[in-house]
Image (cartoon, rainbow, N blue to C red; front, side, top):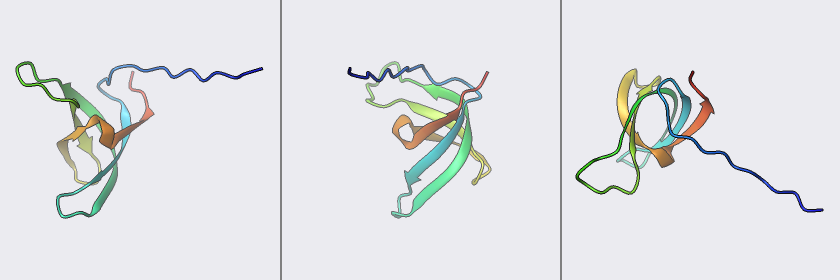
Length: 77
């Protein structure tokens, strides 16, 4: 008997708690926890990955991150 794995996907929503794992321009790693504020898909310019505006708890500021830099910890509402 084979077991199948089902992966559910959904769009990012305001209030999602996320883990941020990225590298800075100088090559150092940056890890933090944040909350999704908004997400952007450019209308006129084609981009492969959407940008997501996240309040970064370590930096105490809102910054844009790519979707591959974040991981969902807990959904918002």
